[in-house]
Amino acid sequence: MSRPTVRSWAEPYKIKVVEPLTVTTRDQRDAALAEAGYNTFLLPSRFVYIDLLTDSGTGAMSDEQWAGMMLGDEAYAGSRNFEHLEAAVREYYGFKYLVPTHQGRGAEHLLSRVKIKPGDRIPGNMYFTTTRLHQELAGATFVDVVIDEAHDPDSLHPFKGNVDLGKLQAVIDEVGPERVPYVCLAGTVNMAGGQPFSMANLREVRALTEPLGVKVYLDATRLVENAYFVQRREPGYAEKSLKEILLEICAHADGCTMSAKKDSLVNIGGFLATNEDDLYEEACNLVVVFEGLHTYGGLAGRDMEAMARGIAESVRQEHMAARIGQVEYLGDHLVSEGIPVVRPIGGHAVFLDARRFYDHLPQDAFPAQTLAAELYLESGIRSMERGIASAGRDPVTGENHRPNLELTRLTIPRRVYTQAHMDVTAEAVYATYDRRRQARGLKMVYEPKYLRFFRARFEPL
Ligand SMILES: *Cc1c(COP(=O)(O)O)cnc(C)c1O
Image (cartoon, rainbow, N blue to C red; front, top):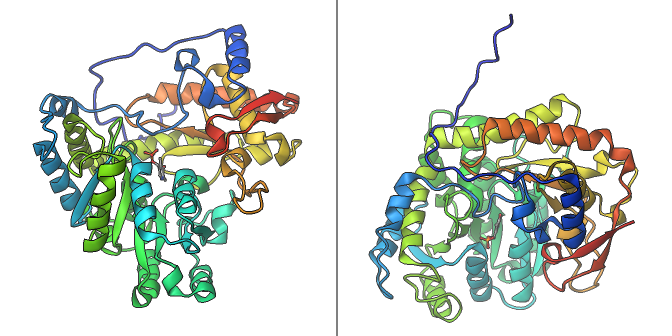
C-alpha cells in the first residue's frame, strides 16, 4: 500500500456553524440558467450547489470577528470601532490616514475623483473592471503596463503581475509626468489569473516614478496574498513574516484602495488609506457626500470592528498557507488531468483557459461565458466569466476590448469549503471537458451600459 502524499497544510480551524448546501436536478438547472440569460451573475443562489462565483464578501468570519460584531459602537460620529480599524490599518498596512468606504469601489471612486483631471493617463498592471471604470468616469485613460507574460496563460513567470518599466516609461514620456497623477498597482492581479508582483519590481517602479512626482497607489484588495507569494518565491523573503512583507510593500507606495471583502475576511467593507495630507483632506470632503461621515464611510460600527479583526487574521501564516494551499490543491488536480488552466496557479482562484478548452469556438461566441454556463448545467457549481464580456468596450471607439485571456474563474471563498468540495469541483470540470465538443457558444442579447458582465443576457447559438 502506498502512503498518501504528505500534506503541507490543513485547514487551521474547525467548523462551528454549518449551512446546508442545495442539490438541484439537471432539469431545474436548465430552467434556472435559461431564466438567468446564461449569466451566472443572474442565478439566484438557491439554485447553486458550490458557489465559486467570487471570493468577494463570501468568506467565513471567525468566532473572534463574530464576537466583535457584538461590540459595535453605533455612534454616528467617532465610533470606537473606527479607532480600532484605524489602528489596524496603521499597524498592518502602515499608512497614516484612513477613510472607510462601504467597499472597494467606494474607495476607487474617491481616489479617482480627487487625483484625476480629464485627459490624464493612469498606468496599471492590467485593468480591473471597477477600477478602470472609475478612472474613465473621472476623465482618464487607463494604460496597461503589465509585462507581456501576464497575457500568456502558459508563461510560468513567477511574478506575472510585474510592471514592464519600458511600457511605464513610454506612457510618462508620451504625455509628460504632470498628466500621470499615479500608477495603479494591484496585488495578485485578478485579471491575469491572481498573479503577484515582486518586491524588486515595486522598488523599480518607485525609483522610476518618485523623482517625477508620479505617485504609486496600490489596489490592496489581495495584497496579503501577494505578500505570501513574495515570501515563497522571492530571494531574501523566506524568513520574513507576512506582516513584515506587507508593511514593506506599502512603504513603497503613497496609499491604497482596499476591498476588505477579500483579504480582510469580512462580508462588507473597504477603505482608502494614504500618507498624503491633501488627498486625505479632499477625500474626507467627498466621503461625506458619497458614503457617509469620515468615521464610518457607509459601514456600521460592527462592520468596522469585524474588519479590524479580520485584517489581523489575514496576515497569519497558517491562514494564508491553507488559503492558497486549497487553491493550489484544486489547480494541481486540474493540471494533472490535462485541463487547460492559467499557470502558475493564482492566489484566489483557478482560471480555466476557455480559449483552449473550447478551441472550436471563436471569441465572439463567448467561450468563457459558455464554459461557466456548461459547468453550472453539469454540476450546479457556479463560476464566472473573465474574458470578452468582462472586458467591455473602448469608451472612445465603442469597439469591444478583445483580451488575450478568455478565462472562466473558479474563485475560492476564504474558509468556506473543504477539500472534498474541491474534489467534487475537479470532477465536474472533467465531466464538462469530456463533452466539450458539444458546446455551441452564446450570443449577447442584452448589454448594459456599464460593467456589462454583471447583468448581460445571452442565448445559445
Ligand atoms: C473586488 C475588487 C475591487 C472592487 O472592490 P468591491 O469591494 O467589489 O467594490 C477592486 N479591485 C480588485 C482587484 C478587486 O478584486
